[in-house]
Image (tube, rainbow, N blue to C red; front, side, top):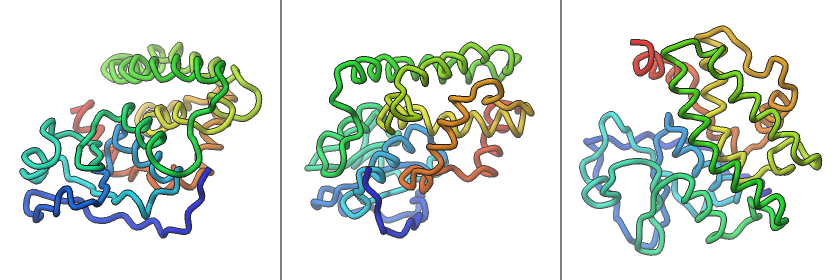
Length: 235
């Protein structure tokens, strides 16, 4: 995995008062929001490929977004999106594959057929996992999510050549890690529950992910996320 000496500077988010960028000028731009776990997937992929100098990070304030973003960049008006080679692509799971396949840097998806097959299974499951967790927030989260976390614990035992879903850190981990980061924070701070209790593989997975610079540089501001969570789910 690429390690970069690029200093991790977070540019300020663009707002409705921000001037339009010189779109389609040959610069490759990744549009994100710092609080968004979907956008974080693409940001992690960019970092782990060592593409900090190749893909410019453009954060957007989703609560006060520039009108030109929808008009000139991405008509769906969501993040993430990637401006590359005169076109704009979206959808986070598509983007992480696209960045991995179309840019230099170490591959984030193994060539081994068994790992690729299991990887597709896990990526296909991620939306089921996250929607189940989110729907539990209005009920009894600890009770309702136990099976979902057990599924991950079992999945982490599939390969024994590393602590990650496919052994080594890959797009599968990137698909999950930004959500687990937030879920662990919410369960710990709001519901006073440790999601890794009795799940040693999940605990190790989180510990090892937190050692990866390309991911560490993208981690969400805890206080800002908890504030946003309370407004969305507990108000």
